[in-house]
Length: 187
Image (cartoon, rainbow, N blue to C red; front, side, top):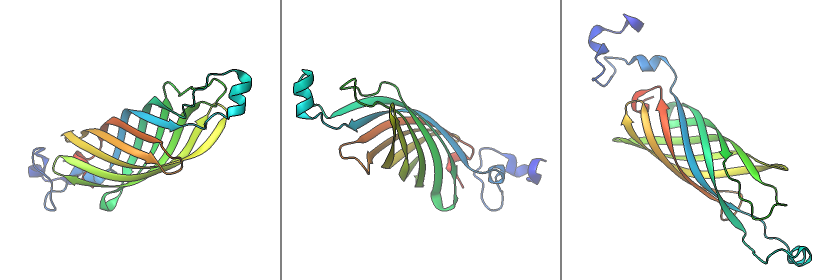
C-alpha cells in the first residue's frame, strides 16, 4: 500500500484522525491562488505653477483606480500561520498625466494567520514589498483580510480587502481562485 496506510484509511470520504493518518500529512501544505483586484492609488497632486505654465487643465484628481492580475504561492505552517509570495501585474495603470511615473508591478512577501470556520477560512495578513514604477521603485506595505469558501476539498473561491500602511487613501479589493495540496487547508 502507498505510504503504509491501512486499507480502511483509503476511503476518501472519511476525515482523517490520529488513528487513520492522511497521506496529505506527508507533503507540505502549499497553495496557489490566481485572481484579479481593483487597486486604488493616491497620486501626488500637480503643483499649481506647473499647471499654469503648461496650460494643462485644472483637474486636481489625486487618485486613480486600476485593475490588477494577481498570482500568489504560499506554504502553510503550524497554528494556522502561512507565508506567501505574490506578483501583481497592473493591467491599465492610472494615468492622470502622461508625465507621471506609472505603477506597473507589485512584488510582495506576505505573512498571515488563518482559521477555518466550517466551509470558510478567514485570514488576516501583512504584506510588504516593492511597487515598480515606469521610472523606478518604491516600498509597499498592506494590511489585508481574506475570506475563502471551500467549494471542493482542494479548491477555494476567495475575496480580499486591504489598505496601504504607507500611503493614505490607497486600498485593494479582489477575488481569487485557490488550489491547495491539503484538503480543507488541514495542517
